[in-house]
Length: 144
Image (tube, rainbow, N blue to C red):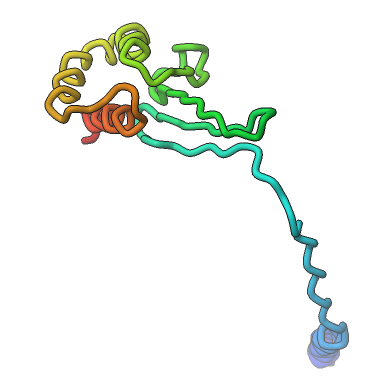
């Protein structure tokens, strides 16, 4: 008798829980969030080369409404250089030499190879495509 009583309570509880779940109405979908109909882009950031070194281009609108480009390079393997912050560069050969000869011994060791690569490919140090190709080549030195 105890077994039957226990089973009936267990069975009734299960039915009650099942019936209770079906009785609750489904929650209505959330209302869509409002979307801005007009807006103005004030800045944009893109990575030109990624890997051990990341070359980033930042476009920001100045007070006159013109976008101004700023370039940064970040050594993802050496967070001690420049306090782990991105290093602002200018698209010049001098800036390239400053970064690659002074940031770490690893980058300084690759200097001659990068300069030969730039000469062979006729890359310009004043164009972002030249910098992106050189940073990409530097990153390729460390691909297994």
